[in-house]
Length: 263
Image (cartoon, rainbow, N blue to C red):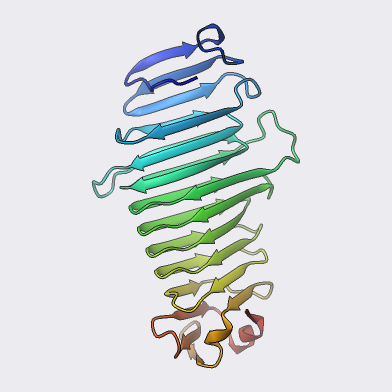
């Protein structure tokens, strides 16, 4: 069933009107459109697409959510927002402009041992992402973009591919995997077992909490020209074969170099 969002007011999309297995309510006020599945197991999924409106959205109580925000706000300090509540899995794709996304994974009608997986593709604006997971059962696969991006993961295992922009990551104790990009990435991975991958041609990767269980995976082509220097608060890694590449291991000593894996 296909339905445009209201610009104001509220309505209930009944089973009789839509042919869906349950009712869905819609409410719009103050630039925010809210869509709520009345019974978690009745309407399984929702696919939301916003190409130009810059509206903000709240999607409640759907098991699977697919959302595309093509163009957010461009005014500094203002952003289009998307809040997803009680979803088990889904995809979020962001475009240009400033966009803030919050995913609150919830049990809803699912069993407590169910798998939760979200795939998020960031855009080119100033974006923020927060994923509130369920006891480590939530997985987030994120591709960063060309903008300024801040990501926070709670009770979530996160795998992130950095882009050409400026990325900040705060991970959780359930493990964070980050692959560097050509931009700058500043990472607080969390207390879990974390992996950091860095290739020839990547930019700056700063790991604020590189700990004993963590692994730094580097291209073998970087090995011969790698130099290490003790700097204020940590270890700096530079590479003669990749002039613009740099890794900072904050709070680390030379013993951290034993956690490098060449690949």
